[in-house]
Image (cartoon, rainbow, N blue to C red; front, side):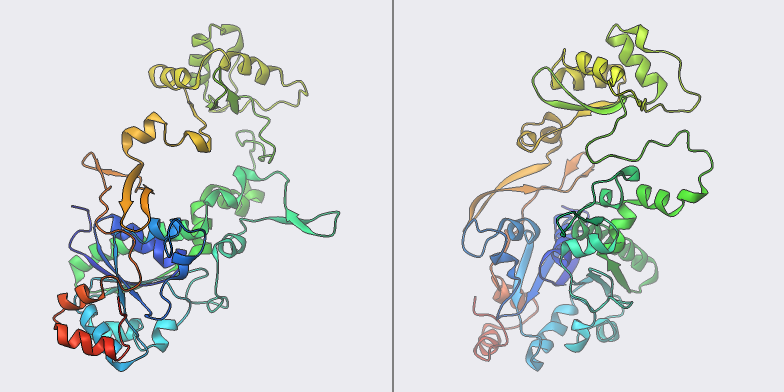
Length: 417
């Protein structure tokens, strides 16, 4: 039983933006009905690799816990079916750019006229207003518009990623645009549903993926926007070098078993705890007057960093993480890609779940990063559907008879699945 059980969501989306928003709501228990064109549907099924025909890994992850109805909204009969579906819905997810839904006659104003309580969330790359609103976007375009992909012209006459220093890892620290925006969109949908319980009124939510990247990278963005106003810079870390920071106390180190940890003992108490544990009281030294000390040194030999490396190499990654938990040390594992499934913390919290798709077979899903009353939302109620897979089932739920469904199918209003 998810937090959104009993909530019905209609989703009109393809590719990552709206799909990911719908996935977040579905994983929280909402009944997500994916409304697709009978002629093409969400072509995410057929791109970015195939585990089985029409089943890409991306589709299987972000279209799980959804049901698909193939419905032609360009036809009067299709729109009549849509209005019957809307009468049962709480949320409408619009993953299309600009006014695509309005042109079909089913945009927000038309929906609100028939169902004032609808929570309508439009999630697009640049947002539904402003001079960029009508531009179709793919994921990296959102990051680029957020300042998350700094570039420079190379000596070869071609553009390359900027490799210079950036404060707090720059806007790129905001993560991938489609996922960042979907998280903010789901957060606003949940808040809107709560507000509706009080007021009885729905609302229109307009989410921009590019702006979400900036919001997620608020630390870097805040310091970029206010850099000239900072008068005391002593407690600021040096801008991050893409080759790695020169800080000794905020640094990656290799362990005895050739794995890695991120060492972050920048507060005096953590540093003192580490030095005592390592039986190196000579390294404690005098603390800086500020609350943290990154120990950035211009010493080309990086003496302190090398001393810490020797200490870290004396134990395994697992030993250091155990000691960190026991002795109040800001040290954590720096996992590599092949370590995700074996990590004890991720396993203990259920970060991944293995399922079997009826067509594609075994598949590992990423789950939501939260536990509610000690339990994680890991239920796969519906596998990622084929185009229109549940059309007859869903239309039957809103009162259409088998005969009526057959007439719509023969007229090409609904899909044939």
